[in-house]
Length: 428
Image 1 (spheres, rainbow, N blue to C red):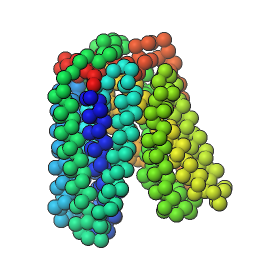
Image 2 (cartoon, rainbow, N blue to C red):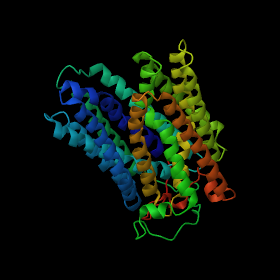
Image 3 (cartoon, helix red, strand yellow):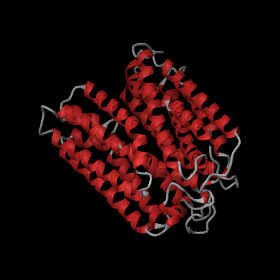
Image 4 (cartoon, one colour):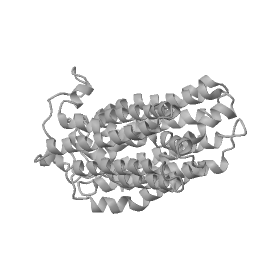
């Protein structure tokens, strides 16, 4: 029951992302007349908030009750996004977007820790898959519902989106708080021992990053995460649409169709993929994700030579990317947690998430420079290289973990899943 409430809470909490972020640029730049610099700055500050919040919240989730960390973070996010309804000048808007990013992102590693605690070894991948699918649906629902009520021709036209985002955070927090109060039992697999790591306490003198990346497997996991992020997620919202518009000369409606297809494929295939891959090792599956990324970029590369079907190939590319996402989402976080030093699961997830955010934030800049200079082929080649790097990194992890049963089964996870306060891992 706890895991089901977490999945529902994650879906509702994602409403704010879909209700605000797709519209905030036009709202700030045009509706309020603050200009492109303010609008771009708001997006950057949102990402900066995410970059700062993830490792800090992960550390707090290790030291304190992750339920409390999640609830406080989301309520902070609710206040931040709600305050945007009342701002009348650029500076408060920028500060509000920064706080919105802090609140939204601070809850992510804490909820990942809860997903690990509130699932057994047999259903951990399924819980992460459901959680990812729920978040995707929540974002899509937020964007759709906001699109029905947002009026960017009025100064208060995005107030409904801000209100929807705040309400989503509040409801999500309430559900997670209720789940935290439910009776718990020790999760299957919680008794497993974690692999050998340096005997360091969280936050010791060596520093969190040095402790986390003290083993080659963890370092290659970071490389893998960054490569997969750069290979797709960094370009999902800006680079790929820009390529479609500037190189393929596609209509804007094609981009919307591609995003919808991406979401539908995830929803349709997620649980099927989880069943088919349940017995496969995480590194092998992540090598497959890198391969799917390579295939996607190859399909997109052919589109410029076939202008008659270029829009269809662009939509197909988004669908193929989605197949890789259905494998990526339930596998990477449990693998990362299984490699985390004892007592540092939340902090490890937060730091790796922050790295992913930082490099994803560079994606639009890379796309703008390359596509703006007419270097579309370099844009494609670079992302093919990132995808190949992801395959190499996953292959290296597979070699490093070969024969180490305690970490090869990422679905089981280490004993370190429980916070360092001594609370046992629990299941729904």
